[in-house]
Length: 538
Image 1 (cartoon, helix red, strand yellow):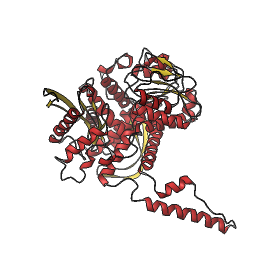
Image 2: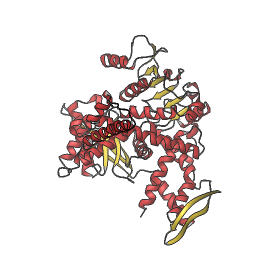
Image 3: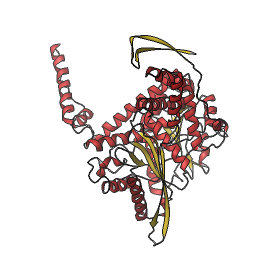
Image 4: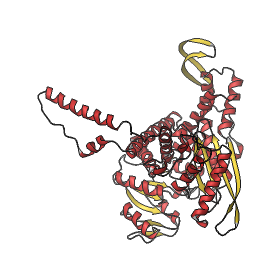
């Protein structure tokens, strides 16, 4: 049993004198761990959906007593009613609200017809709208879409974005279709969702994901505006990740990479954690290897390099390169743009099997491409002291356990890769209020800074020191008006910092040690639970 002291103001209609009430709640979980997940911690190649489900239930076991206590505080005095309500909410947040599977014919440029299949899953609408990516792939199953929609929910909760979670997929290989065919498919998919009231500024917001970008988001937005949203002044907010000319936002392209850096920065500069894993809490001369050199990998590498870290290895799907003396991120980026590959980059050693690169000695490892790249059979070969997950599910639960024993700190995907979700929220806010962030405060900020400088000069003069306060070039540029990108990036940095701080506190409260994944899920799940509790279940 654990004793919990909490200030009480009232239970139901019985008003109590303000004070502290001692409650006894069992510390042992009363919610059974699903038997079908019992083997996941030892499996070499578990299904992605089972990995997500396992991580969720792992956190629920720790939160059980907090759930019950929260229900008591909110007036559920009957033990039976508490148990029933708790179980109902847990079942609700561990399953999808709804899943839509659609099929429609598409006429190809050749004149032939093809039947296209698409999915959209709403995991949770405890807060609206929901937000989730739209990807084009033939390799993603419906179970994967459900699991990814759940991750969207918990990502939003983890980073304090007031959205639910969703995910969508069109089962095509986009390399086998012309741009006009892809446009027809995208617009028809959007139309089917619109007809079923499945997307909209207050319902669900698609965003870019695998094989989709701002082009597809513009098509979806345009389809919505020309149909259901033709009278809706907020209709531009029906999708995120759009081009700037169609209501997009500056700073989104680099958001995931910046979020990964922010996550790494907090935990690397945390002296306690850095000391446990054998790192000094500074960026200078830290070495890192990144697996995946696409949009996420490139921007992550830029931020790491600016902070003083040295890239010694980069892996792509077909090849990996290594140079212990360092690889220039800018030069590699230019080389890839010119050659469409990193193969043959001057001064590097090549690995035909790109996975072999992640076993090299380094301070930080960033898997930013594939799922389950680190698993039970190879986790013991990892020499990195810190892993920052830039992809979904790059580490299996069995590998996670091995890495913790090796004192390797893993920063989980539901936190580390939440940068884009955060900036998508900022884009939606911009569309809803129909003004760029900071546009209404530029003049006010300029005047405030002038007043501060005048005040400093006046104070010095009062003490007999007449000194002209000169503005630096950087301050002068800011005084003209902070750009939307600066405002967005500052807000993202702050959001990541606050979330990291709370995840670290959760790891200490639950005595999780280096298990930041469970700490992050605890933060997310309890927030979602409280939302369902407040909204009611009737």
